[in-house]
Amino acid sequence: MTSPQKIIEIAMDDAPPAASAIFDHVDIALPRLSECALLLDIDGTLLDMAPTPREVWVPPDLATNMGKLLQRTNGAMALVSGRSVNDIDLIFAPMQFPAVGGHGAEMRLAREVESVASGAPPMDKQLKRRLAAIAKLSPGILLEDKGYSLALHYRLAPHAEKAIYDAVSAIRADLPNAPIEVLPGKFVCEIKPAGFTKATGVIELMTHEPFKGRRPIFLGDDVTDESVFAIMPGMNGLAFSVGRHAQGVAGHFAEPRDVRAWLGRLLIDDAKLK
Ligand SMILES: O=P(O)(O)OC[C@H]1O[C@H](O[C@H]2O[C@H](CO)[C@@H](O)[C@H](O)[C@H]2O)[C@H](O)[C@@H](O)[C@@H]1O
Image: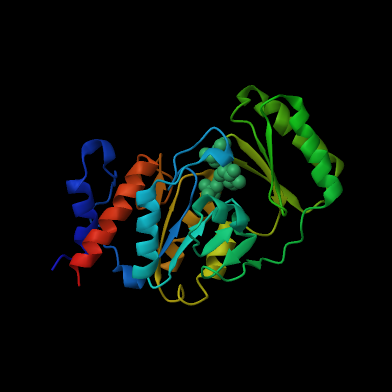
């Protein structure tokens, strides 16, 4: 029988170098899938980055494996994303998964059930209009309205980064008491209500069945994932970063395709443990 410890070693040994997951601690014991809660960030972790949010592509193998992982964890696999749950559903359609969406603003415990909001009110409409006007600074700045928050994407207009942040700062200076915060991401500046993060979402998720009592394993890539990296040790969890070695993680993957290969190996290796 393969030991849990072997799971990572096998994933490393068998994968071709270009697709290998790079871990700096190879002796990490992963629990059986039936004992862990798999928590997966989307953009830059499961999926390759795309020029615009709508252009991401879900490889069919990944969708199939995610369906299997959901089964093998008995429902304890969730997407933890800055995207809204509605957006997540559109990307993975026709599949649905449990999810923490909108950086913790929303949560859905199981597929085909309604999502529950964190209690944060939708962003003030007038404020949203002021922020939206920042997109006029340059062609290529894309607005993403998530209801609770507004994201200004500048991947297609990288020269506009400073101007965007300056404009956001000016609006915030005008509204010093507005309970909002600025969340920088990958070529995106997001303005959201304060008071919830991916970490608060994960903490809440882990109090509910089937997640409760399991060992969380979180994979993420971005600044916005650092709040979850930070809480994993206190939850007896493991965190892995993608594309860089983030502080406090147990190991890291080079690219999303390595994460996808690793998830496939997890299924194979866990089946061998039966
Ligand atoms: O928390 P995540 O699931 O990683 O989502 C983070 C943000 O992802 C999306 O934006 C990013 O990905 C786009 C597609 O690759 C890319 O074009 C953009 O530049 C990135 O910032 C999504 O649109 C955001 O809502 C998420 O917060």
